[in-house]
Length: 444
Ligand SMILES: Cc1cc2nc3c(=O)[nH]c(=O)nc-3n(C[C@H](O)[C@H](O)[C@H](O)COP(=O)(O)OP(=O)(O)OC[C@H]3O[C@@H](n4cnc5c(N)ncnc54)[C@H](O)[C@@H]3O)c2cc1C
Image 1 (cartoon, rainbow, N blue to C red):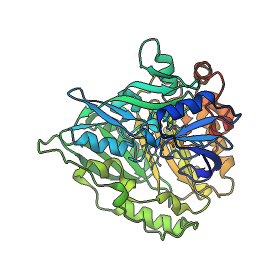
Image 2: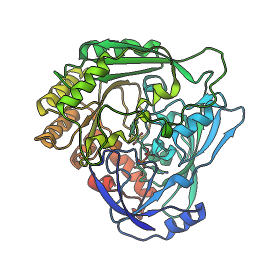
Image 3: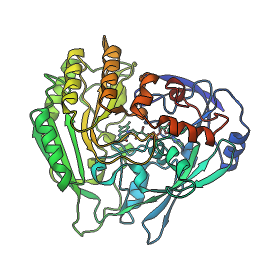
Image 4: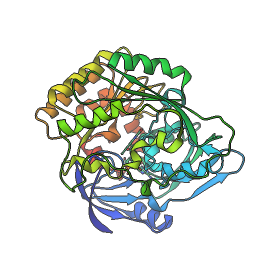
């Protein structure tokens, strides 16, 4: 094992840990069953979580990459996927069989283990719910070195739902059975609309819930922050021509941002961001057929875009508030304006019903995700105040995007935390599965 420094996608937090890359399942089982260390072990996938969910300073991080098998069960739309398989790889292999995962995130570079451990959501949440809606079995390695199958219903259901959204703290996911949907075409019929303010954006997103399988809005985080932006809506194409056999290989299909890419230096300032946002707002609107890949994962074509914030990285503040709290969205934008928190990534979306998992993030309402440069004066104070207001409005922040939340807010945002903790402590009485985030937020 090698001692290496790792970061999450936001690059604000760094962590040195022993990196374990097992060569076989037996080697992993032996290690986990006999390992003794106060800092324990955490699994990681592709490290697309933004903060410290997958980091374990002074402990061990286990790379799930070797869990790379994909086995399709013919005629059922079911696939058994290794936890290290990326969503992008799953999409490609599924499309070749006329199938597709019902829930995919904004990047294809998320592992199946990471998707379950965060119970991720996509642009389709108002229709499909979160990723767990397609998970029919989880094959989990427990802290005692034993492997057990967990199902969403029946005697193992409480362990299943504690693992969904459980941030790797119940065990290491080895593989999962996923129910895919039929897909005639590898394309989406897209319609984009420009909106001039937050009210227009909210009205259009609400109205689009009924007719569209996918909805999302890009919001301008520059200028007067009044919520202008572009609302994107899409439905899977139903035309009957053959399914595209493959989508572009993201790793080879880089496009560049209008910022120079010099290691360690940030090019985010109010002038560059304003120019980018103006360009994005005025760009020709999409209408018609788009490839499924570019619609689902637009940022994957921009390689290492997280580096444009420079050495200090960036925070992502993603929260959900129930409907009826639209004034809070406007308040957050006004706060960002006051802070001078210019950025090129702001995304707004509506959530439907949540999943049964105690720590799953989505619940009905609005979710807003904002990328924020971390070095602004008063930022911490302002975000703490927003967190406190969120609690009062029954909102919560997305833990897998978090790098800074205070632990006292967690039980208020996640009222089922204690229930989850009891199940988790029962699954791992030795407290072996740990991360920097679990210690920072006192999750276990
Ligand atoms: C550009 C971008 C777009 C994104 N878009 C979305 C989006 O649209 N919707 C959304 O919900 N999220 C989104 N995310 C967040 C991302 O989906 C989650 O952070 C996801 O958990 C990352 O998966 P990963 O494989 O990188 O996991 P990691 O970052 O490596 O780990 C994340 C968590 O999962 C746990 N974990 C990973 N593998 C396993 C395993 N085998 N067993 C047990 N636990 C494990 C880790 O311990 C950790 O707690 C986005 C992230 C980026 C960078």
